[in-house]
Length: 65
Image (cartoon, rainbow, N blue to C red; front, side, top):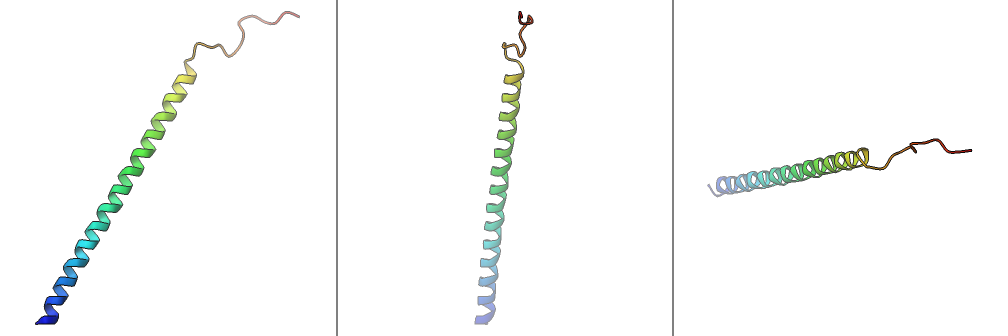
């Protein structure tokens, strides 16, 4: 009977440990996805800022010789 109880205790501990590891992996996955999304938004914002600046890329008039 003692061995049977120990088996259940160990089994319950392993189940708790596995659930904790799953939660940690999920948290890491969510954090990583949030960082990627923030980087993507930052890249889009900087691309939009550069694309719509008031500076002209070329001069309006040709240079005089």
